[in-house]
Image (cartoon, rainbow, N blue to C red; front, top):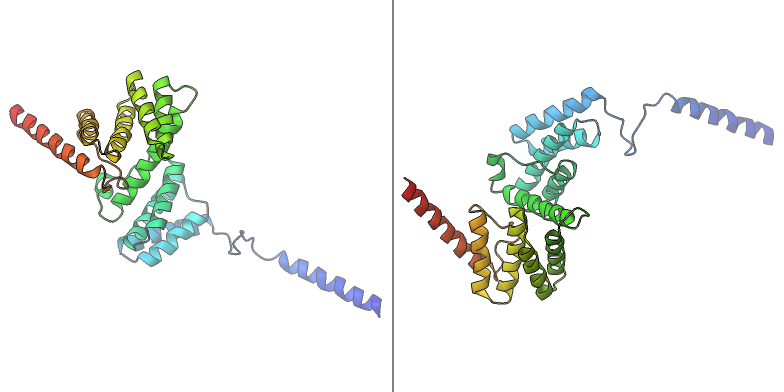
Length: 256
């Protein structure tokens, strides 16, 4: 009796293995792997649905195409960009940020087209994510082996600022400026954090002075969306921004 039961179990196991061999291969999520044609169909349908404002359908198609791992790099970036747009217009800022962050992780130099970057829904989120990524990259580069002494000071100053050690941060940032930061972007960054600290310490004249120097270096300078609105430094920033615009208009009038 035991032998008959044992033989039955062996036969059942053999049938089970044979049946499994005919099943399609499946990825980790339990869904059948998409063919290259199916991936492209999802991708193109997603873009078409987006243009038709069928955002839920677009999101489902684009997500399926991205999740397949079979899109070209440029296609994945385009898919994630449209997914970010959908999340932002649907008031899902966190998911919008995550898609933009994924894009910059694979392509740090990526940028939105001018008309896309100015969109009222996702434009501020994009500028915040892009600016934060550039800040992190700048600090990383300034801390690198090939960085100058001034760049090392800049990185140390920003780190001290992030840690809330404001006086130490200010001293270090001013040391970086005295040593000479060759890249205008680095000087702007050092002066921006110095302005923040001066304004936090209610030293408005010194705060405005730093912003004034920033606008001399870059008349089109803008703070990150996450920085704009802070009660300590926003008034000084806006006054100097307005003053810079007046100077530019006056200069253009004389040239004309």
